[in-house]
Length: 224
Figure 1 (cartoon, helix red, strand yellow):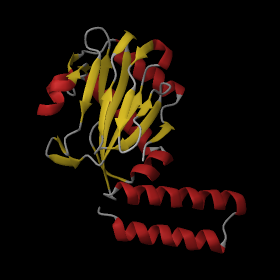
Figure 2 (cartoon, rainbow, N blue to C red; figure 1 turned 90 degrees about the vertical axis):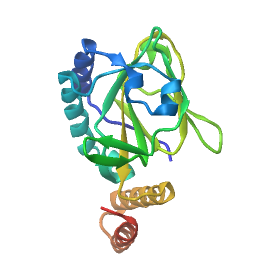
Figure 3 (cartoon, rainbow, N blue to C red; figure 1 turned 90 degrees about the horizontal axis):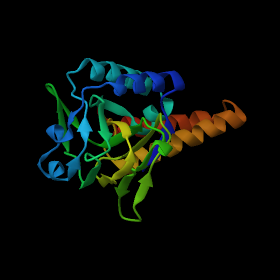
Figure 4 (cartoon, helix red, strand yellow; figure 1 turned 120 degrees about the vertical axis):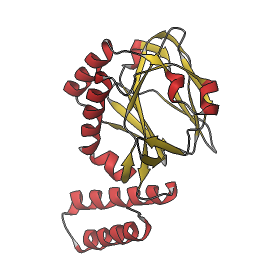
């Protein structure tokens, strides 16, 4: 499942871009695994900077208030949001797979899902598409600023070279309460169906029964 959705409102996006404007950027290879470091050529905001802490608070708050993110990810643990920049000589991230486990202090986060939040408008840079490879044709993603894409952490993915301008983005990983992508997809489809029925018919015997089915499946599959 690859899912896109709006995340930041205009005021949140303005604040994020203000903080990124004079941020203390560093070499992005510092946080890459052994294999990923060979493909990574970008800049990243050090996590111990004041800019990073303010941006993490902003993004985390937006995620906690996003019904679409919560329904799709069913988050158990969240790796703190990170921020990167592509442009000039630091302009791409070749095909790679993210580490299965990320360490946030003493907390281990299994990377069931990866998420990218675009923070620059598409017309501000050329290239810079997120390409997610799978069993079928590769999926290419380049979204308006403030929009997010959520996709399985198991996939090979890359960021194509930025040939003009600067690509700014946030990225992070999610350990879901429901480990399997197929199960998360089924639960999201069921949740969307229930919401559609409720909006069309109000509360009914059908919506109550389907809601019970949803929660029984979640109870059977979830780890907390």
